Image: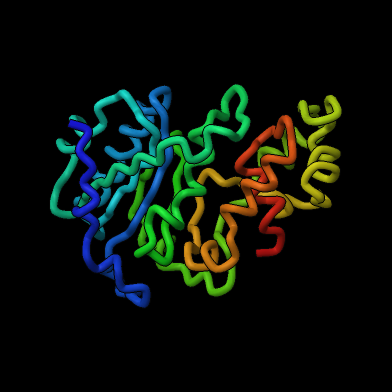
Length: 238
C-alpha cells in the first residue's frame, strides 16, 4: 500500500527524440487529500481512453497523502495505462496559499526535477475529465516555447471587471494583472489558464522556470491565482 511504482515508467520515455505516434503519453496531476477523489476520477477517465488509444503513464504528485491511492489505481491498470506516485515532501510548504489554492497547487513546479528523463508532459488539474485520446496534444512540437495552454476566456469575458483581493487591497482583475503581474490585459491570450498545459520540461530546466516562479510567489503576501499568476508573469511571450 502506498507503493511508489516509479519503475513502471515505460522505458521508451527516456528517448528525448522519440516522436513516434505510438510513443507513450506522459500525463501529470497534483493533489492533496481534499482532491484525492477528483484525482482518481481523472485517472479513471484516462485509463478508459487509453484502452483503445496510445499507452499512457499517469504521474500523480502529492505530499504525504493519507488516501490510499494505490488501492484504486491498481484496479485501473492495464497494458496501456500505468501510474506512478511521486511524494514531493515539503518542497513548497513555505509558499503561501489561500482558500481554493493550497500547497498542492505548486507541486507542478517539481515536474522538471521529479521527471528528469522526460522532455515534455501534459499537466491536468484534478477537476478535469479526459474524453478523447491525448496524442494530438502530446505530439505538438513546442520548439522554444515554454508551454502550450488555452487563454482564460472566463477571466476575460466574465470576471474581468470584478474585484479580487491582493497586496494593497481589492482591485479589478484588469488592474490586478497590470499592477501585480505586469500584464497589459487587452485580449484573452494575454493571460493563460494553467489547468491544462503541455509543458516543455527541457525549456523549464534550461531557464530555471520553477525557481523563477517560486521567487515571484515569495514576493507577495497574497496572489489571487498563485501558481497560475507566477507562470503568466514569468513566461510572458514564451
